[in-house]
Length: 274
Image 1 (spheres, rainbow, N blue to C red):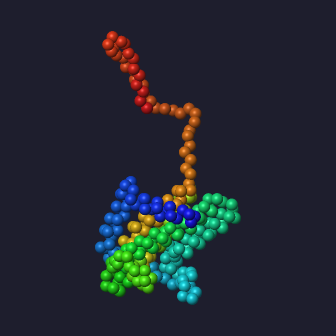
Image 2 (image 1 turned 180 degrees about the horizontal axis):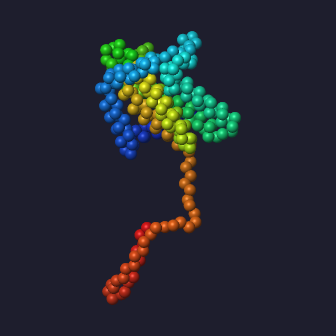
Image 3 (image 1 turned 90 degrees about the vertical axis):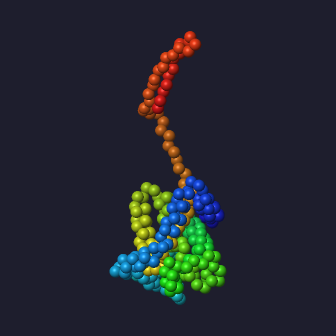
């Protein structure tokens, strides 16, 4: 899986500049720019909706020496849907099950999930360190609810005050989309994966805005990155077989005869359309 990561990064770059994908990339860019002026209003309204069901807080966690280990309430559990630990746990589960059942598809899907996790982390961290956008908590305390932008913050500044620079794009949603796309692409016959997965993704996105972990405009780029990375990774190992039907096949066609005299020669023509 590690040898393909440079290809994953290159494939994402090719996708973003390919003229065939101009519409998708433009829509992502325009939607992000269009949402930014409404970030404050959207955050407040989503927080109001989340408050009655206790989704307006970051949640609580079981900690060991200050490190988050497991979520201990519903908001934290929802937030952990997009956590890297959840992705690694899912990939490990598929690997173990695949080894026990000798199931190649499970094993390769597991490998792709790990590959996607690393690729997604590299992409999201790179863009975060370029855009330097404040997370909502830091933005509100600074007096700018939409978040300040500090392009190319220094490594020291980023490490010492990460929430001040790491909002764009949402790493949780990017990771979730990559993982979901890989699984759905490998198991197209399992029809519930997409509706359940996208519903969980929507719940994750709602909770992060409600708890002021992210702004709504942090999402379009995350969805694009996650989907493209996941598709590129999964499709690389899928061989599509095109079946050709042999034997008699009904063909709908029409025939038309024409007669003419050209320079004294009688001719006959046959025109077949199908």
